[in-house]
Length: 279
Image (cartoon, rainbow, N blue to C red):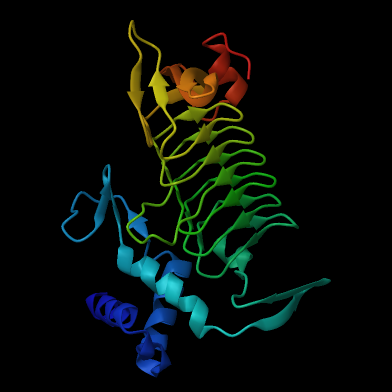
């Protein structure tokens, strides 16, 4: 890997090297490693000596550089999949049966993304560099953006938008940890990190600047960019003063945590019923 990283870093500083076969081969090897899951844009490790830290995760910036440089070395091509025609620089993933992945018609994943065994893809889309771990459901019209990291047994409900990130390179990708339940039409972007087994109610929108307010105690506790493990979160709002007056601004409210008695595969409605909230 260190040899690949050196070649990628050199090409990033000198784009003329993209004309050399050694460089293009290295870039394509990185994309193949991403596609097979042997390499990740971000991974759960404590060592952050050479990578950006996001909690207990590190972001491998050099891998993102390879993804960015993959675009200019690829040529536009036209190919067919059944009755459909595509014209792009990247092919779609193949051999789902061998990979143990169920793909419903209308779903697609780009080459360079990793889809683990046991994943179910309803009509949905997974972009290059993304990692979707075992047993996860990508429900109808959900999108998993470039380089997003989705854990095991996650449920991405209908219409969920998981943001992608290629540039700036220092930016962390969205991370959804194992067992999380992301409710219908939620939006999670700009490197937000959702902890293990957290539950996001329908229409929760999380950006890097969104206030996430824990209202379970006597005093509210504010945070940004991170949802603690097993939190139950619903949409909320708070009053903010502007020059033109006071207006309501969206936020997210942590109203409790998953209880030990709650089945990890529970529906969103059941998790919220424990807190007498209908979403």
